[in-house]
Image (tube, rainbow, N blue to C red; front, side, top):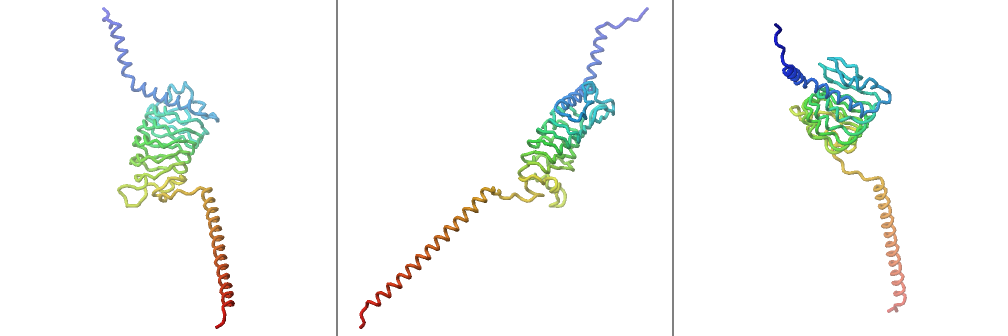
Length: 281
């Protein structure tokens, strides 16, 4: 006698239970897929360096520790490193990069990227290296980057970033490399980035090379704030005005001197005439 078969309902429930046990892995893969596909759409690739960044490869970007995608490094089935440096890539940085939640290193340096640094990068809680240097990025440095508590490297030099350096970045205690030189930043350098707490007083946490090339940035280890410089037109105007004033004063002084001399001469002549007309006694 055959053993009773489980009802189809039970089989269905069992399969559903198996499906429900899968979401963490499936969701992670879906996150990486969304990260790569959206990043690819936001980039221009004139040299064809990302030719293997295709929809078919996005569906399974990692095979354990292996990836066949340009610049992608995997660890245990998840993307943990994106390195696309020096590929002449244009376009913008997609905020969907934050979907690569296991990412520990993001290097998009030495390209032609424009637009802002996405504040959504703050969702990359495992990020240790952020290198976006030598691009054309604009706008402020997002203070939300301070939420990436494991950041060791922030390299944003040689861009067009503006505004102040967020004070919050000084709270990144693991930060060992920080470079925002040659941008358009302004305002004071945050104290927590200028001084290393717990060490000898006056010892800089980051030296001046991390901050140079920002005309309106000031404070230790750069020189203190200077008075606002005068424009060229203002300097020329002041020079011309001073010269004209000196000329007027000199002319006035000469006129007064001539007048006084003339009056003195007249008085001398008058005295001579009077003495000549006075009778002798």
